[in-house]
Picture 1 (spheres, rainbow, N blue to C red):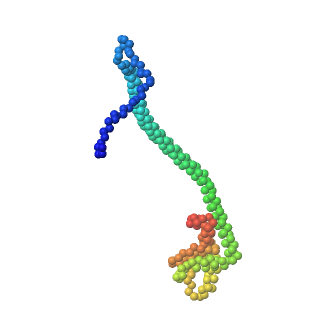
Picture 2: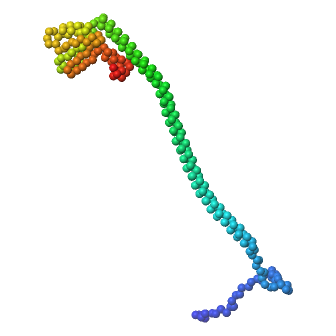
Picture 3: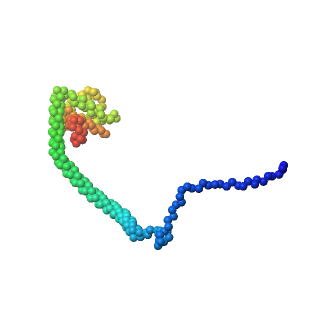
Length: 246
């Protein structure tokens, strides 16, 4: 019928399970006298556990004691090593000081020996220098005498050179000469100055060696003696101290 709902009267479908073909498991029936209670749990080995705990505690104690002993021994060893090192350093420093002192003493002794060895040589050198100087002076004197004998007029050149060293403003001066040289100088200067006022005065001094002179003014003194000239030559040969000592 139109507009009507037809009720389904079909019964619901039920699921069918295929039964198992295996036989059911056997059921164990306890014999008479056996309890039907489940088996008891095994007992714990308490003594073994205690022994293991004691062993572990002993090992832990040994380890802790070993670490403490190691730290203590390390610290003591470090302190002992530092003490010995400081003591050794002090001993080494003391040994070095003693060795330095011995070296200084040996150096002083060696210097004394070298000085003692050098003194005779220095004395010999000094004597040789003195003898050489005397020889030079003696030879020079002889040469001067011979030159003067050959040319007595050389004294004029000596006087002129000495007078030229005087200041320009010098008006009067005295010439000290050996008597034999004085005559030659008077004649030469008289010829040069003519008959006018003569600024010079000749003084005869027999102690002077021929060939030399001294020029003296109010403000100047010139030593042109032979000895002074020879000393200058010797100083040039043997050192300035010879000239200063003469």
